[in-house]
Length: 114
Image (cartoon, helix red, strand yellow):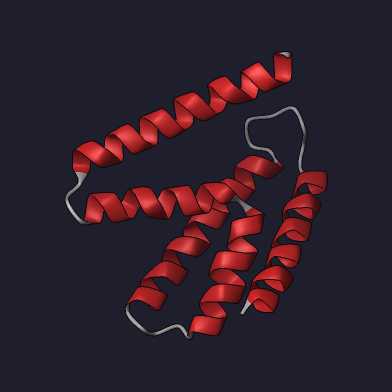
């Protein structure tokens, strides 16, 4: 299973890099934005299929964990937030979403400007 995750991850990372090279660098709609949005969409579909037992465990490992995990970690964040909302953990979802975005951007800025 680890090999499937690794191969999927390598393909996801390479795909993200390729999209990043093909898109404009100094625009809101850039390669990372495209990867985040499409990765979230793809992982949402895969998670639904996996949780409803319509997707094999090997396919989830390769495409969901490996490919989408490396293509963008934002996709995993999105599905985790959606799961909190789906299970009526609205307060936790709001805290998770806001704190993840605010703290991640803050720490990226700290790291960038150190």
